[in-house]
Every structure is written in structure tokens, then in C-alpha cells.
Image (cartoon, rainbow, N blue to C red; front, side, top):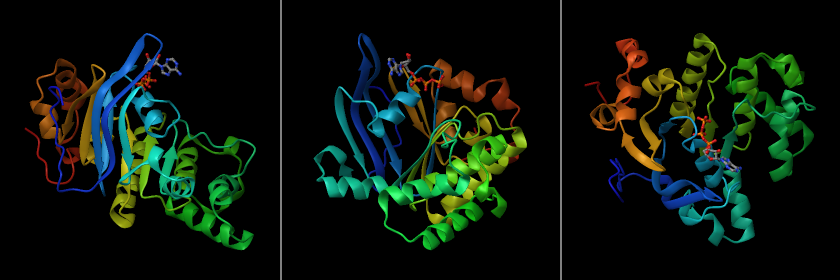
Length: 273
Ligand SMILES: Nc1ncnc2c1ncn2[C@@H]1O[C@H](COP(=O)(O)OP(=O)(O)OP(=O)(O)O)[C@@H](O)[C@H]1O
């Protein structure tokens, strides 16, 4: 692995393992020989300057974009090498929340949540209603939200409904693309708390693309920084502080970062320099 600063830990179970991945469009090589791990039970915050390829990597992991080289293992399996039925089972263990929610506008919240259930499971309408009700409660929406259409929801409610849909099949690993973007600071903090609670209560593993320093400081167990077409550094906030890269320094030691209250500075087992 080139000169990446890494906290790769063979003792922990990696639910997502990315090795030597390269992705490009024509002459534009966006990712070059990139390595990354996400470990069971953690919230990984994935950051990087605009246009560095955070969405491209997430879409590549989800097989929405082909890669030119490299290997990706999800929950210990190489998707491409699996028989169809095992791929189907693997898909069910992954949840995705795209930026802006991407709810189906013609479906109610309940119908949106039930969409993956209809696609992957064969359940009675009564059971699907009960499951949707539980997911709605889990993400902190009022029961009445079930019959509302996305156009009738606030930004925060849309995020929660999209999270409920991502959790519809009880996934092990959830991908969140900028989950707090567009929310006011209180709404964003509440959403962060919800994600942390789901990690703690459901043992959820979370891959979160974010620009939100609050989220990085308060709920992420580990951070990975994308730059120069690869992961420049990954680890705790302390690792970010010690990274000599100029962008990492200005991001984590810049004015916005210094304004963070000490009480919001980092979860599990790490301390600020
Ligand atoms: N479908 C595509 N076809 C061609 N180029 C693409 C495509 N998708 C992304 N790119 C290019 O890949 C690069 C990385 O884009 P990407 O959207 O992943 O950046 P990002 O880090 O997610 O940015 P932001 O933080 O602004 O969302 C950009 O140069 C973009 O133009």
C-alpha cells in the first residue's frame, strides 16, 4: 500500500474490504489503487474535498459503477464470485440511503419502506404493515407519517423515512451518503444521535459519507480521508491531527474544527491532541 496512513486491523472483522480499486471515466482516473476497511459495529466517516470521488467509491462498492482494477469484499464475500442466490442474500444484508433520501415520490412512507420487502421477501400485507410500523418507530417518526407522501414531509422527516427504508430488511451494513446535509444543526445532531443509537442497539455497521464536522467529531468511531485518488489517512481523530497532509490539517485543525465544543470531540477511546 503506497504511503497511506492506515489503521487496518486484522484482529477486527472487516465487513467491507476494498483492495487496490481503480475507477475512471475515459481519461479521468478518479480512484487509483485505493484500499479501505470498515469493521463490524463501527461508524466510519468518509470525507474528502468536493469532487475527489466519495460518491464514485460508494457507487462502485454498490456495483453501480464498474471498476477497472481491484477487489471488493462485502461481509466476507467477493460479490462477483457468488452464485445468484448468494448475491441475493448478500444484497439483503446491505442498506443504502442516498443523498436527499431518494424516496419514491408516488409512494407513501409506508409503501417506500415496504418496497424492499416486496422485492426480496414474500410476506403477508399485515406483516409488512407491522414491520413498516416498527421501522417508523425505530427512526423516531410519528405513526401518522406512514401514510404521508414525500412531498408532505420536512427535510428531517425525509431523511428519517429514507433511513427507515434502508433498514427495512434489517441490514448488517448501511451506506449513508451525506445523511445530515440540508438539516439545521439541531436536526443534524438528532440524526447523528439516532445513527449512534442504532449502532449501539442493533450492532449496525455504518459507512457514512459526510461533510459534517459535527458528525465526524461526535458519532464516527473512525474517519477515512479521500484525496489524491486514494485513502490518504484513516483512523481516529488523533490520527487526523497527526497527519501531515495539508488538506487534512486545514480540515481538522481549521477554524470550523476549533469551534467544536470539547464535549463533542470524538467517541470511543480517542482523545484530541
Ligand atoms: N457518471 C460519471 N461520468 C463521468 N464522470 C463522473 C461520473 N460520476 C462522477 N464523475 C466524476 O468523478 C469525479 C468524482 O465525483 P464524485 O461525485 O464522486 O465526487 P465527490 O467527492 O462525491 O464530490 P462531492 O463532495 O461534491 O459530492 C468528478 O470529477 C466527477 O466529475
